[in-house]
Length: 382
Image (cartoon, rainbow, N blue to C red; front, side, top):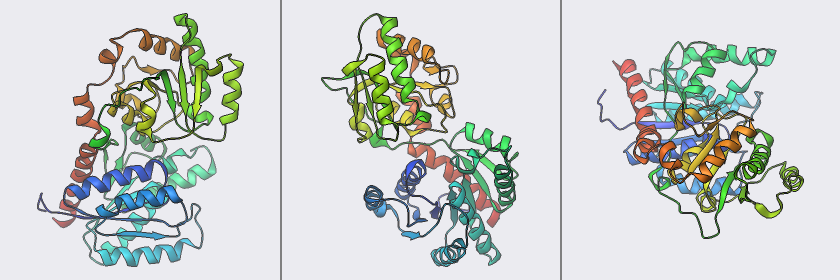
């Protein structure tokens, strides 16, 4: 096909919240800027006022419109009328590419795309897991069934797109070696997010931003901060920004460690506003895939110290001194003390702005994905 041809692209996913929604918004905006016609199909049940505002922001990029239908998390009888309505809507839009995100979005894109192919539509079918079904345990019956379904649906895909190599490896371990084209297209952030954010006048030394739940490691942050003070031999300051079910537990933990007001706690706020609170961002997650907070912090010119989990080493570098053994507060304290006392640490350890932009901008992400689209369409259309 013509390498410069503009495509009609529809992104399908279930829940318009979290990382998948963020990924699709960035991708839709960049694809629109490059002249492609983009549409979204997603659930109408999930989301609230915040998500409605996000939809308002991206509507100018959706030439093929926004279609919202009830799409439940669990498989049930209600899926069939939703599938039929979605099929009829997508058929009317005559897409070149159907790109499913997450397990339910992947089912929609691949089954509807395959139905269109039966009717001789030359549409490419893509699937990005974004974790989703890959979180299941392969040793349990539920996991065995899910991964068998993934293997079967793989026959209906023209390509798999993973947000990091870690996700690709998990897929290969749990589902099997892909039998269709499979590529890594790293998450990326927009140019407006790749701009330095200076720390404010009353900035603290360390900052945690995220959900207040143990999986994300706020408890590890508090303990590591206390140990960092002991290593350095003087009081420091820190802040925690976020909301979540375990907030009170962390407030009590902070008191037990005798930290008083040296760790302040703030409700969730826009991430670039939070970045003005400190220069060193700590990401102590016990598990991750490809967290946007690491990309956003580096884009803002911050020093990042993070657990060696998921796709984080692909961003900071596999041998980076900023990577810490997951759950090891002594190791976190050691690295935090180095970063806090060595003025040249950031320049030595963090990726350069040029290398970061080349790999993790939304433009680079969209280019990788578009290359996969065109490769599939060339095969389909000859």
